[in-house]
Each structure stands twice: as C-alpha cells, then as structure tokens.
Image (cartoon, rainbow, N blue to C red; front, side, top):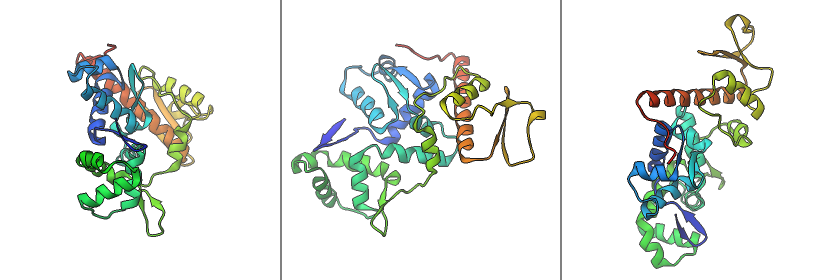
Length: 266
C-alpha cells in the first residue's frame, strides 16, 4: 500500500484485485495461504509486487488475514454474486473502504477534470508534498477512475449520494455475521448454522413439498437436500441469498476436485 498525508491507498486497481479474489474463490474455495498464493502467481513471497497485491486485497476489503487469506463477505458477493445488483452493491461497499477516493469523489461529483485540477485537489485533500503527488498522479488517477462509478457523489443538495442504491437490510443482516459457512456443509446443516448466526429463525427448516404452506406469499427454494419455504420478507430474502452463495461454493469445490484442483495449504 502507499500513503499520501494521512490517507492510505492500494497500488492495485479494484477490478484487478477482484480478478485475483475470483481466482481464490474458484480454485481454492475462498481461502489460501500467503505462501500458496505467491506460488500460484509465481511471485516471491517477500517481493514488493506480491506485497502490493496482498495489500490491495486487504485495503479494498476483498480478503482478510495474514498468513492465510480468506475472502470477506463483500469479497465473495463481488466475485460470486447471485445477481447483477448484488455484485454492484458489493463493489460500492468495497470502493468505500478507500477514504482518499471517497473524498475525491464527493468533491468532484461527476465533473470532468484536467491532470492539473486533479493534482490540486489531491494536494488539498491530503496536504501532501506537490512533488510527491506529481510522482504518483498517474497511478492515483487510474485507480480512482476505475473505482469512481461505485463511489459516492455530491448531489444537488450538497449531500453525498451513492450511484448504486441497495437495501440497508442486506448490509445489516450481515453486520454481525463474521463467520462464512463452510463449503462442506449440506443445505440442512447450513440452515441450522444460519439459525445459530441469526440469519433464519429456528422455526424455519427444509421440508418436503407436502409440508409447505402455499396459502401465503412465500419464498420456495428447491435443492437436492429438500425445499426451503420461508415467508417473503427482506430478511428471509437475504437468508436465501446466503444459502445460494454457499451452495455455489459447494458446486465450485466439487467441480474443482473433479478437475484435480484442490485447496493448497502452502
């Protein structure tokens, strides 16, 4: 990572970092050792280029951990979204982790700018040395512009606005959920785990079709393990999304094993 004034920023762009996160998800079920990642990237674990990639994964909020890297909930939502909207919402959340870019976006809004104007704005925000800013300006401009579409803007009332609006209920339902269910769990085990984590009330469970109540508006999800039947509420929609995300990881892991690819522990 790099620093201007009190602001830290990554050296690798958001989408490039997500490409790496997608590979970690697809080939290693969302978790890999630092040593293992260096090996598959054919980089020195102690090299600056590798450290920049690791630093970017952490700064954007795509992955967490030191000796072992694990995709975060927003990282998983961005690289394996169940819908376009969810992917965009995850990117909004990830982009907001970089305070410098957020501040620049609010100041600029949708306005075009020249390199000179951008340099002056960066100096005004960071109070960094002008010569240091000039040296890093091209990289800053590229990183900022790639993330700009997901960053807040200043609306006509002067308040910050987000390009992609999404339900706060989705964020709040994940807020206290620090643990991502294992890909080795069956759907029934997942429902029990989500119940423990607060995602699905204990009264809900997988049931056969004959047991389902179809007299009210419900979410009906059919899986090989059974059928999930829930009242149609925002919280329950979020819970179903969690089930589908974990189911996707199960299938990814199974397909990887069939192709001879397994998680690398370093």
